[in-house]
Length: 447
Image 1 (cartoon, one colour):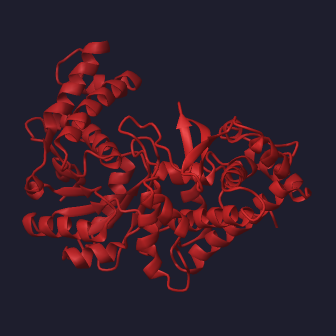
Image 2 (cartoon, one colour):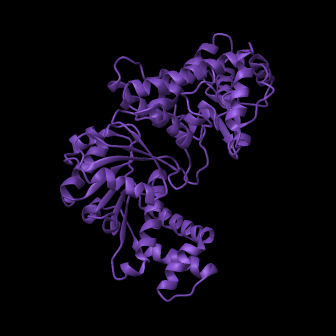
Image 3 (cartoon, rainbow, N blue to C red):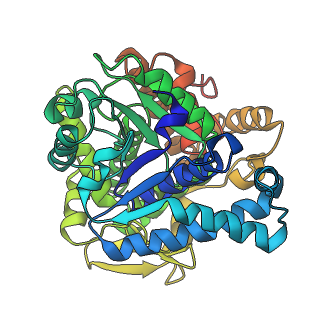
């Protein structure tokens, strides 16, 4: 069955969640554009939005309507041409509303899992839990047609595990979108052994249709993205705990977060990134990965205790950040969690922050923030000069940053050596496209 034919009936499991809603948007937009083509006149298109939360599904419908309007406002010529071929000369608000109506007409929001039984493609974006995923996928595997293909958005569970436990007979592939799916360009494709031969080329064609950059990861727990992120995060946690020998918990978290953002020229510090993903999600991924790597200890007592206390991070439905290691107001960090008191210590309270900054020392003179370099054409040269200067400094901040860079590179090389990634370029690509790093972890900046 061709991709065009499969796009006529699609289901998204977990459509009410942040990842599911973004995946739904990408599919809804592509299906609506396909529906409007003259050669498809008379074909029926259905996108089943499935979630246990009916209120969330109503929110998804509203979200898709707004995004459809924005899409036409940005690319009116694409939609206008399709309507003109159908004999409708529309423009401006009328064009946008017409496209939004067409998109709404294909949506089938429901809490009934069985509505996915007629789907040609099923996209799974539910909770990162092996038992729950396999229960749902197993039920659909029995209900759907024998030629239905499944795309899992899991970020850490080996696809062969989902396939075997769900008895899908090779009809599933890893199709890991990055958050938010509608914005992030990267998709990690994970092809398990015994996959149906038509599925990998179909997934590649779909990824290209959705405008994604596709990077292959082998079917090893955590894949490339979380394979690096989990170990990178554990390094940051370990560094903060070592700093506690001389500084408070609050100061240690602040210092490592600042080092991993400003000194490493990343978009977020490591604790801000863990907050963004969610401490409970970070914990869940570690729990999934740890049994697959018996020679490592992919576990954090600190994360366990924070989650136990209810400090989980993550986002609210509107996309704003929940408090985790850090407290946020208007998207900005305003305080740090104090482990001993269980409360947050404001950045502007007392002189602890000034003392922590003084202990780290100055940044090299050639330092530029991530926002400045992200679009700079000469950023490689700027970064090389910056890290050369950093190596010549003997401050605590420089020492911590260089140690972080070294560990990050070790992790990247480990992923290649373990066969998670086929090559260094794939590791670097995932970190640059999926995490918006300016440079990949496997580099020669500190050689």
